Length: 221
Image (tube, rainbow, N blue to C red; front, side):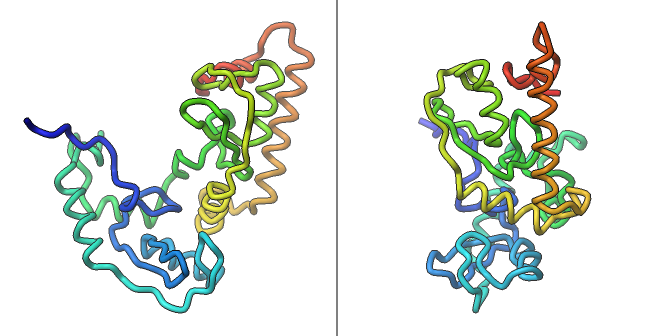
């Protein structure tokens, strides 16, 4: 009997900041032996000489050739997981490497599915899918319905996601070009402004406005 086809990329192959396969993986000498794409560490060290995840000083960075071979082999053997819609084929290793070095948008894992902004203060909710949202956005949504905007399951609790917050803040700092050079504090002020607009619309609208619709029903704008 043949085994089921692989449908996901192993987490150990993904850079924890950009959520892309590590074409050039390196290990930093923190107590947790974290692995990153070399570009991630290079950009981060321009700002801080610490591990992006745990803040420990970086004294040594070691390339991992064996892991690199495993990842590149996986990419070549699973083109369906790295599909290029424009050319209708699997992406080459060089194309993936370019996407990592010069991203055109933030990873969707860091995006709030309500605001479509990178989450500066992410929280998880206790729905079956454990969805993440920007804290203020989900709090605003829950004022109307105590349900997850994405899967409609009941919500009884929200929890801070410090690990995701760290990753989002690191990504924003190493790729300021994707945020018009704005600082995290400036982005947080813009988020607060958006949420005030939502609250105002909620208080004045007799029927759900377009803004309230995508908040309460999880539709995309």
